Image (cartoon, helix red, strand yellow):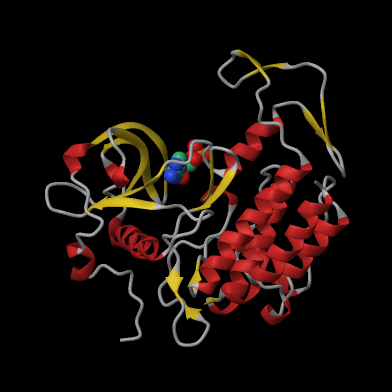
Length: 323
Ligand code: ACK
């Protein structure tokens, strides 16, 4: 059938290509937890052709999460099997067999989510001006836990921020070529690996494109309202162009070093506000060039928005200019 169900089929459960033995997995600390379920850091013995232990991330549902959460996880597993790109999180294995819960094992991104990374970089004492970030004199600062720390090498420059945007558009251009729609693109769902490498993650809500170009959401699940395109809010229509809208919000998050979009705007009011033509204003720290890209991503008519391929090209040029 044409139905792209969450993929909770027997085929999924019997897929042995990715099967990893539970007893070769040692759980360590909890990395995060939320609506989505739980993510643990773990050591996996001999995974992905590596000798000895490798650090991995294990995603699981919280048990009390109910069917839709479980389905999101299966759906994510099925999507991840199909993809391979340096800026998309890599699937390493799964535990699907009896004797324990369903686990997805993915590569570990040691710098965490882009959102938390951007927010942490705020405390590093850089003044963020329109064209550059200027280091503040004192190299020491007080961490959240009260330790006196030396400012580390997480010096974010304008070039770093453009590189994040560029890498995200490259990963997204790949996904849209694969006819995959992410549907939940946000800095909380983008991870950062060593060397500031972007890894697009959290495919729980993503779906294959079918019947032309559009996914029509049938049931009401969780919805990331402030990242959603106007047509997704209106008609539950999702395309790569609605992912482009979300990317515009991601760009806003990057430029504001992880601020929450539409501050003070209630979710219930957002649709009418957007429909009346309102868009977020240019953040103080944002160049005209970057703001212009956001505004293009937020055009009401999806066809008038740039494609991810267009965006890759634009950031390519900006990176060369900021070299
Ligand atoms: O910012 P964080 O530490 O990085 O908090 C979130 C949390 O789990 C919920 O998503 C972290 N996380 C998720 N997936 C991974 C991964 N593959 N590698 C490292 N951290 C991860 C994320």
